[in-house]
Image (cartoon, rainbow, N blue to C red; front, top):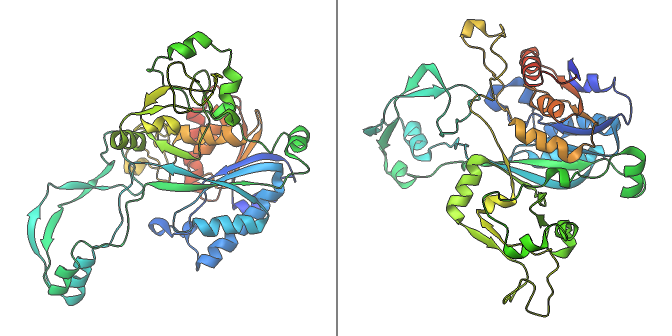
Length: 407
């Protein structure tokens, strides 16, 4: 493992051409998030050009056929994708990481109208005092937010003070955020996929290594139990119409859920039953002259079983920082980076685009989650971070999570 403190544009110039197997990164979104200077660009076009510039360097160091996975914000994702395409990447897909913990950052239009008119709104209801959120706070499994004990506010319900405000009561400016897009891009191949894979070890996705596990609490049907594993290969071939074998799981999708989003989806949709080939009567495979091949599957459960669930824990963000003195004056050390991703999610993404034992590059290391995921997955890793504060957090987190792994 190699961690580099510095600007990624300069640091990547020291890396040899065609030396990296994959890129997995969570770059700034160009939204001036929480007033951070590292996320600020003068215009959307400037942000796109910046994406093109760092994309050119990533493209250069990737091996032919090497994949890049990069997170983006819903408002600026198109600029990220165009910048990477302008850099020379082939855009292969867009993945959606969906989560249930987002909260709307919306302007109350009715309140804004009254404020502009200089009118005081009458308080018609109050709630219990609540602690204000830590910048970049995340939610616990219970849905409650991690708070800063030093500040609190009392939520109130107010009545419109003007006719115009009454007319626009209930109008806002934003939806509840529930997903982040991830671009899947690839450096152009040399020759065919097969030739490129044989020559460079890159160009393909690790489908079997990223399959979604089967439903553990649903017993196999008598037909499948009788067939055993005789048709396992057929069941794994998407061309057969199956794509599911309980020994290896379902074909991975381009939608990724967190556990809260999965629970919401299952609660809303209820149980569904998987069938293939209709009409059916009696033994699976009968009807319309079909013959049972083993590619059929019969299972039931929530829709989330078709997608990957990133498992998180309430202490994951700050784990490994207990002995760090960087924030000693603020009490217990904590991860101040505002966009920390789940370790399990990053492990899945690293595994999807990186050949076994390959090298992963993250030019925007942040608090180090990709480095943790890469090392736990048995990959080599190069991480670059410009902010010294985040680099110290990343080093401490990676060291804690990867104890016992050769770095």
